[in-house]
Each structure stands twice: as structure tokens, then as C-alpha cells.
Image (cartoon, rainbow, N blue to C red; front, side, top):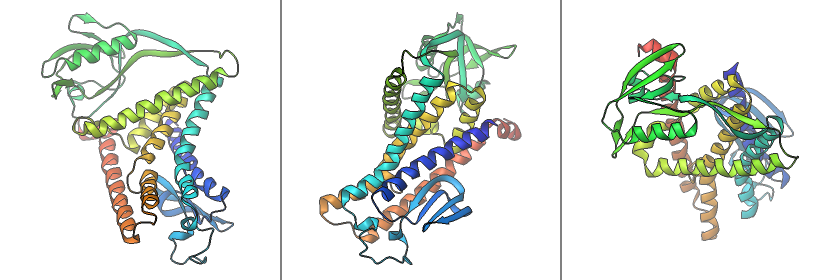
Length: 362
């Protein structure tokens, strides 16, 4: 049930993103020929008012199609309602609308969280640090740690609770590159004694594990109808800033952070786990993935909204669009890059699923 919930959330986020493009175009009277969720052959398809709505076989995104791209379009090339014949500002709005829609959705979800679940009011902690996930082949996995374990002691020092315990453990790991640490972890009713040796990455110890406080977040009733809105404003800005910092770190420290990149399989796995927990976790998951989609699509890369916006910016500076062959080469290279990266991430994430690890004997 958790997997179906996570898949439904991801599908909903894609629909919202593409609906942003679709509504921005139709609101301005721009002709649209298709609205698709996914790529490849259509599983379900319906035509209404000249627009083909389709659910396609490869669930790695979606797109809005325009008659401009159709060689058999029934509309003349100089039709003023074709996207390419509209002013730059109107085309820019159509391109940017998907990112705007995802940011607005994240804000609305966090407002709903404040109204339904409540306003964050601290954290109920118990001693120890929770292992939220481990990367296959990294020191944490090699030491025997698994997601759900609780690290309660490092050497002779017991771990307290809360975010400070996480910070202390992270600092211990960072300063122990290449040096063995003796840790105690709890797994259900078991107490495990493990040897953990952080790998040296630029003089900093890393173990390939996601750590978080052991406990649950507390919530209180909002003080009036405006507090959920103020809280959502704060949270959207904070999550967007953290997401931008994450993408920035990926670019500037690619060698160290590339292994931490997750694809759709890992995202669904994480969403399924949070869906089983229910409550605020699912609200935050939806908002965070929506913001990630917005930031990712804003990057100036081929096949993404940011790449199309970059072409539009170049057109504005030149006073005319780039030759069609250059635009096609730019977009086709992006398609190959996107599909290749997606395939690599799917294989990597699938190989790290517990069931696959057991099948392979790891």
C-alpha cells in the first residue's frame, strides 16, 4: 500500500507540473495538441477538443505537446495562436509555469499540514541515532548496519538523543577517516557490536549512511488561521534553499556526492516507508519532492524547462531564434542524457533494495 501511495504522489506531482504548462498556454489562447504523463507508447488515451490526453508506459516524467512540433499540423505556419508565433514573454510564462506550479503545490501541501496535523513544536527524542538508509558497498553497509538500526554508543561514549546527537556522531565520523570505530547498535531486541571504518574523502570521513534523530516530531494546534500560512512560507523557503545547496554541492563536489544521487526507484522506496508512517511525514515528502522537481526542471539543461528557457533567453539577446538544427541537436542530446542517467539510477537504486541484496547474497 505504501508503494502505491508513493507512486500516486509522484504521478500527481508530474500532472501538476505539466498542468502548469498546459494552463499557462490555454489561458493565453495558445494551441495545445497533447498532454501526456510518462513517455513511450500510450496505455490510456483520449482526445477531447483537439487535445490528446495520454498515460504512457515509461513513468519518468511527462510533457505538453504543441502543434508547432507536428509536421502534419493542420494549422498554417503563420497561425498567431501557435506557440512559436507568440511574444517572448508569453512563451516564457508557458515554460516557467511548470516550475511555478510545483512550488505552489509544495506551499499548499505545507499549509494543509499546518491546518490538519499542526505546527511543528519540537522533537520527542530517545537516546541514540537512527540509521535511515545505507549505501551498498560503503563502510556502513560493510560494517553490517541496516536501515532502521539505532546507534546507541561509539567507543565507550553513549549517544544522547536529538539533533545534537546526530551532529556529534557526524563530527566523530568526519574526523575518523581511515580509523576504525567501535559502535553499538540496536536492531529490534538485538544489541550489535560493530566495527565501522570511515573512508577518507578529501581528509573527511564518510560512511555512506543517512542519519537522523531517533524519535518523532511533535505538533501543536495553530494559533489562528494565518499561522499555517506563515509556517508554510518559512518552510518553502528553507526547503528550497536546502535543495539549491544540495544541487550546488553535487556540481562543485561531484566526485564525493555522485554516489548519493537517487533515482525514481529510491524515491518511491523512501515514499513508501513514509507512507506507512503516515501523518506529517507524507506531507513533508510531497512538498520536498515537488520542490526538488521545480529546482531540477529550472536547471539550464536540455529537455528541461531551464534548457528551453535558456534558448528563449538567447533568442531575446540575438533578436532571432537559433537555427533549428542547433535547437534540435541541443534537445536530442538532452534526451539521450536524460534517458541514460535515468537508466543508470534505476539500476543502481534497484540493486540496493533489500530484496535484491538478499537475492545477490549481500
